Amino acid sequence: MAQLTGNAPVCDLEKCMICREASPGARLNIGRHRRNLQFKKGEVIFREGQPVSGIYFVYSGTAKVHKHWDAGKDLILRFASSGNIMGHRGLGSNLVYAVSATALEPLTVCFIDLDFFRQLLSSDSQLCYKLMVLFAEELDAAEQKMRDLAHMPVKGRVAQALLRLEQQFGTDQQGAINFRLAWTDLADFTAATYETVFRTIKLMVGEGLLRVSKKRISLLEPEMLRAIVNGTGHQQTL
Image (tube, rainbow, N blue to C red):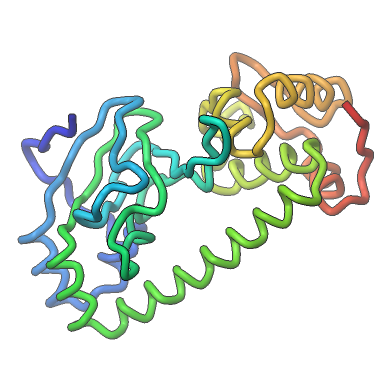
């Protein structure tokens, strides 16, 4: 169960969308209304189908945003990290969360209840516009993901997922993606089975495209990975 933090952390105005885009007066109002919650690794933040209670902004840690897919399997739509918004897809007329979110590591979020968030949007046209742009971008990304799942081979989907993770999380001093991802989560992110993803990673390591050490993945040949994503690289059938 989420715990309230003792001292509310100071928002990063450059990373957090709502603090970055809101007017100065609105920021003060946000500071009075927000709550800071902490979640343990594996704890559900909100669940698909639950009534919308409010919107979450990630302060620290990482969560997976996922949706029920087939026969008890989930599809991970994206990973939410510092500054990212969660729960906004439940703002439609139905007012239930369309997806679930689960902490992948200890997570601290800023929570804003639904009534206040609606007031904020109605009084701040710039923030409302930015949220509309975010919805449009996410819709485009979701449509692209569906096309990729239908037409792109597993190797291409794995290559694409790794490139996106490196772009989002950066790399550590050893050049590995700065995010430790379980193979099961990578499988859910690429809509493949654990066994298929494991074989694909092993194949790509053998081809010199990746290096794996203690589940830390380094992209050795990013241009070749992009070629695989675009369908111009070598695609070995598993």
